[in-house]
Length: 321
Image 1 (cartoon, rainbow, N blue to C red):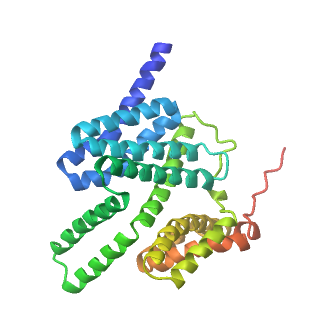
Image 2 (tube, one colour):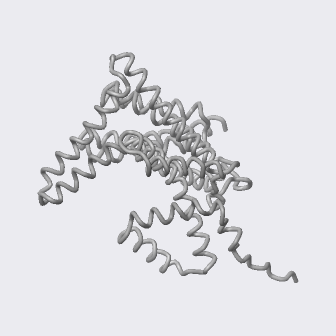
Image 3 (cartoon, rainbow, N blue to C red):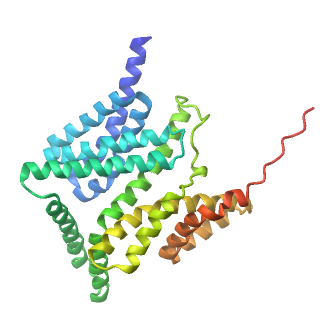
């Protein structure tokens, strides 16, 4: 029986590691496309770690990082290891969380960010490049890539100017956008991993923290007010720093706003077709306004408490015979 169990475990890891290596294989021949698909690599590894434990999961991540080092270079392999390992751990925390879901999400994003900062510091000590210069060079290289694609895209001069403005804004807000993307990615992957663990019957649903109960505590409001005020009354570097902090915080409130929207849709018994139409119109027609309204809805939920004020109507159980 032990040999059968070990064989199943080995087969599981072979499949998961194989899925994680698919983006790397594509990146060898199509660097841009493969690099974009690299965002999928942590998902199977995080599932394996959450199912089989941190020791086996760490070994799997290290193996993929080693293969990446041979194929793409030591720097790419080390970058993959330092970014993916804490991300997989954080996804496992959130997937199995029995405390409010925002806690493991915020903690995991913080760990990934601190790991990246520490890695930049170590790299700076080895190469003699200060972390600030390394960050500036990285952002400039990515900006140059986007600008080059813009020049060869055949866009009109006015459209190119708009693209250059977007690139400049993206360079200034790179950290905030990265943290925001990391937050959304971690939550989405954690919910997927949780669903797979429940389907595999290796995790009990009893006591797990559901997304529907997502609610940030009041101290987050203070941070939001301070950052928003700094954006309004300052200029230059201070405003950019505040914006980079405000973006991921607004993302957390945006998640709360989405949860509230789903709650109210259910409360009003809105058919799925109209739900999709409303969301699609907001995202396509006025995406920025939609994101702001949803985030503000999550923020004001701190005082209004929409879910308590308009609770779902519970269907009474059928009478016993």
